[in-house]
Amino acid sequence: WHTMAISEPSCIEVAVSVIPGQVCLGGNLEVVLTASNTGVSAANAVGATLSIDAGEALVSLISGPAGPVAIAPGAMQNFTWTFASVAGGVLGFTATAMGTDAETSFAILVPVTGFSATIVQSAVLSSVMTVNPLNVLVGNNFEAVLDVSNTGGSDALGVEATMWVDSGGPLISFVSGPAPGPYTIPAGGTSQFTWTWSADNNGLAGFTATVSGSDACSAAVVDTGDSGSIII
Image 1 (cartoon, helix red, strand yellow):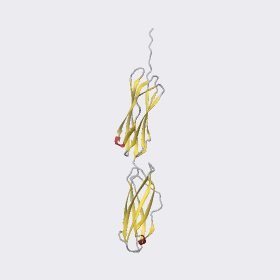
Image 2 (tube, rainbow, N blue to C red):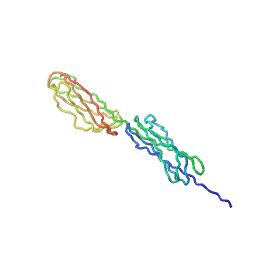
Image 3 (cartoon, rainbow, N blue to C red):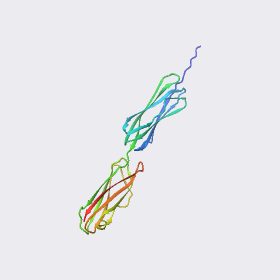
C-alpha cells in the first residue's frame, strides 16, 4: 500500500475600498485592500501594491502598508495607503495582492482594477459690479449690479449679499435691493444681485458690494466683492 498526503492550497480573496469615495480638496483619503485567506493552508509573504492609473498628480502619498505578512487560513489582513489631495479631479487605481502558498510554494497574484475616487475642488467665487447708468441726474434712480460666478467644483451655499456706501453717502439714498437670501450658486453657475438707489444731490458717490457663503463640500467660507461709483 502506498499513502499520499494531499495538501489543500491557500486561497486569497481581495476586496478594495476607497474612504471616502469623494473627498474635498485638501482632505485625505485612504485606499484599503483587504486580503482574506479562504483556503485551508497559510499564505506566506503576502504583500500588496497600488498603482494610480489616472490622476496621479491629484494626490500625494502620506503613508503605505507595512511589509509582507503571513495570513493563516480563515484570517485576513488590511493593507492601507493614505493620500493627501492636492488638486481636483478623478483618480483611478489598480491594486494587487501577492504571496506564496505555504504548502505548495505556488505564487499567488490577485489584481483588482476599476475602482476610483473623486476629489472635489472648493467653490471659488468672483464678482464684477456694473453701474447703470454711469452718470445720472438728481431725482433719478440708478442700479448697481453685482454679477457673481462660481468657477469652482462645488456649490456655494447660503450666499448672502451686502452693499454699503464708501463715499458720498448724503448724495444717494437706498430704494431697493436683492430679495432676501440665502442663495445657492452651483458649481459653474452665476447669480446676479441688484440694488436700486436714488440720486439726491450732485457729486461722486462710491459703494462696495460683497457676497459670502460656504463651500458645499468643506463648509469653508467663500466670498467675493467689487466696488463701483456714480457721478450725479
